Length: 108
Image 1 (tube, rainbow, N blue to C red):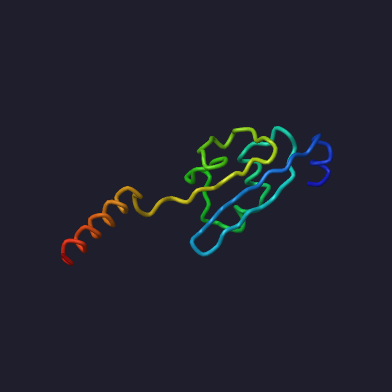
Image 2 (cartoon, rainbow, N blue to C red):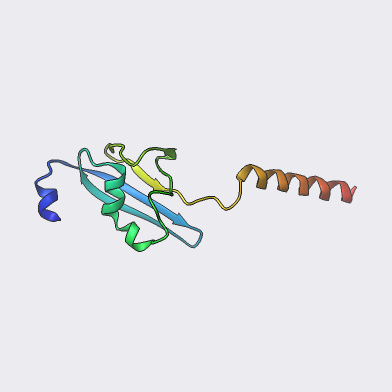
């Protein structure tokens, strides 16, 4: 792999991030110009470390904006692999607000 990178031209720094409730990983890489989001993820080794990641299912992004796997990276981009949501965040906030109102009215 080192020979492939040596022949690829100038390298640029990027990061690949993935987080689970119990563990967060941020990998710094130097990749050739023109490297895509998918290529950086594959180079990071995170697919082997976290077998639950499925690039056909998990959304990915750069700096919190969802992007396609084929998007070319720029220097210092941070690629993020997103987990599937267990619950709808809006529904959870609504339930908390309703629970807070119920507690406030029962105290009065």
